[in-house]
Length: 201
Image 1 (cartoon, rainbow, N blue to C red):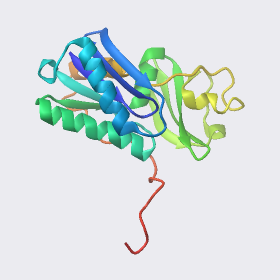
Image 2: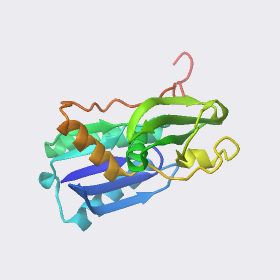
Image 3: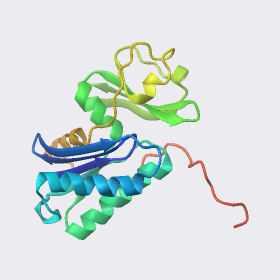
Image 4: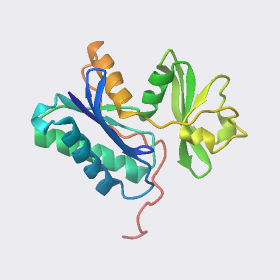
């Protein structure tokens, strides 16, 4: 039984038992990640009928994504893992879409008229993640992701989508089963945060 969550695009939570999604919640919210995530975790776990002691671990998306929203997800995962005494594992958020769609370029909104992107073959990441202008991304095949829909000229025929926490859990489980001993919770920002502090402070 795994609690999986992601705050790279939507605020999304899933309670997963093997390949079965027991409960899930998601909401697109550019602001208020902290309050919303806590509420969605409570709702999903209540629906699933599980407590922290019932979990085998927590999986969280590590981005890439803007600084504030991503930090909320990672801090929440670490806090809950510590409180419940379970391991926490990090997975690149784009990997959820890549694993779900197979041969695809995944594109997410990076703001500032840029996108985050990664390229996949058979669901495995072959290139990226990187950040750049939409025009700089070579995407010869299928393109998936909410960010691609913002730039139809660069990504004609793209299909929208956000990282599904259930797929994050599946990716984490496969990697651990293949012998990876640690899936770090290091955030993928790919660039400096928008706010750097007050000069001289």
